Image (cartoon, rainbow, N blue to C red):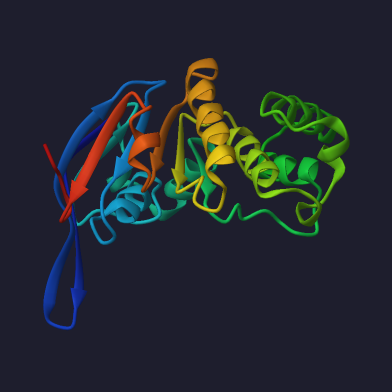
Length: 222
């Protein structure tokens, strides 16, 4: 389902070439729950950007259902990001003047769904991630960090993506809430058959995923 073949990402710093990603290959099946770990500067965030089509690799292939996103045009990449990928961030990235419901409805505005159908799906997803009905109409400032992250996860699921990329999704949460959010992601990978790839610094939490990719100096270790 996801095949990464010998990808490299080279950045220039003056006249010096820096290999942020240096020849990484792996394959994941649909519904896998995977963590990416490593020290700061090991290439974790760059790896996520490449998988999400936010950056193009210098060389190599990234195949999603047989299509190499590394060769896609900018227009096709926009479509790929909106339909095939869901993003979850450490800082939630919710629109502050919209309610939880409206935040989840937002990605569906690019679809042909009616407003009523978008609302129904948003309600279903928010219920699925455990956000109660009364809180679905609150704006982010009136929700706790854990509740905001639930909204962000529901929003990531809005367009039924094949892959969810989560960058330190528990980084701003206390350990207990972080465990709950991580369990929620794991359960969703099963119930939605969605491949979820999580960047985390927490090795204990990472050990609960189906597979751990440990990066060091732009390469997979071990």
